Amino acid sequence: MQNSGSQTPRVRHRKRSSEGFQEASKANGSHLLVHDQNKYRSMLIRTYSTVWMIGGFALVIYLGHLYIAAMIVVIQIFMAKELFNLLRRSHEDRQLPGFRMLNWHFFFTAMLFVYGRILSQQLVNTVTTDMVLYKLVSKLVKYHMIACYALYIAGFVWFIVTLKKKMYKYQFSQYAWTHMILIVVFTQSAFTVANIFEGIFWFLLPATLIVINDIAAYIFGFFFGRTPLIKLSPKKTWEGFIGASFTTMISAFLLASIMGRFKWLTCPRKDLSTGWLQCDPDPFFRPEYYTLPRWFSQLFPWKEVAIMPVQWHALCLGLFASIIAPFGGFFASGFKRAFKIKDFGDSIPGHGGITDRMDCQMVMAVFAYIYHQSFVVAMNLSVETILGQILMNLTLEEQQSLFMKLGQMINETMTVQS
Image (cartoon, rainbow, N blue to C red):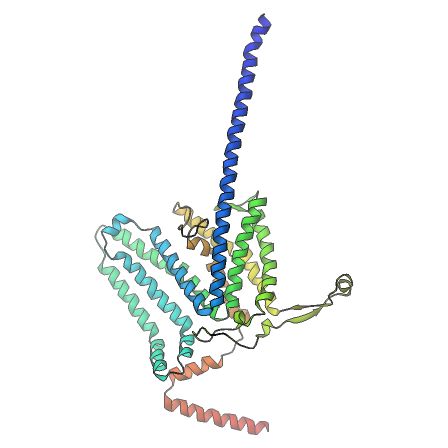
């Protein structure tokens, strides 16, 4: 009796422990189930919005250079709105009527300056046939810089005049914040428009590589991610980073071959028209044929392979998109942690705000422009550029004199050669 009595509490304790373990297991299981359901629901929402974005993006690409540039401007405005709102305080803004307009004044002044510099030659080429418009545009281009400086000084004076006691710190922080947005965000993304008019290829390929890298990193991290990559972004994993790098490099090489065959994508736009483009293919887009090793041709039916020179450049773009461009996302992650926010906005379901999608694109756009100007563009002036400079800077008498002297030089050269 004593043994049975002494064992009863132990049995009861074990029974309660097993029941508690089962309840805990059920609780954990239900928690994991809910977690998995939320995870897949988030993935579906993200996929749905991605499909819509890709469809809209493809439509704009089809419409052409000017529409793509307009899309970039709209994106920049949304990005500026999201970032301006980040440091806004409604209480202080109510005491400073009209102060918000100052941010937009600086923004549109910067837009006028940057795009005026980038698109001045295209604007001149557009109105060359109309002498009245040509003279007007030439004057605008000539005095473009002083006009933008006057607008900036007007904003500077506006800021000083509106300074209010006990609001100095808030006002100066907004002033500094606005200029940081213009330098770090707007100026970098403006390089995208410069890439567009060099040929849609130099905009579309870098932008597509960033999208592919982002999607591949998400998929590889979703299914295989185990090892954290960086503390700033806990969801990023080494598995996602490495898998996305290989995917992006392969995609860069293949996409360059596909895109390089379409003149609509490779021809530069010299004006601001929307018509169809025709041009002779640049040597970078002409395939070069390489003979394959004999052992390879014995195993496969191919004896040679055609590779465009631009495909080797695409590998450099793919390498940058895989290794360096993601740090734009890490910068944005650290930025959001500093301000204790999850996303910059909520305009894109499953993705956050426009700025959340453009962080890597800005870094990539600058690199693509610098790379193109350094290693792709030939170091010579185009006929259109020279004619534009002559028409803008020389009087009619000077142009006639230049014409006569150029004719004499050509006749002398032809006489010597004959």
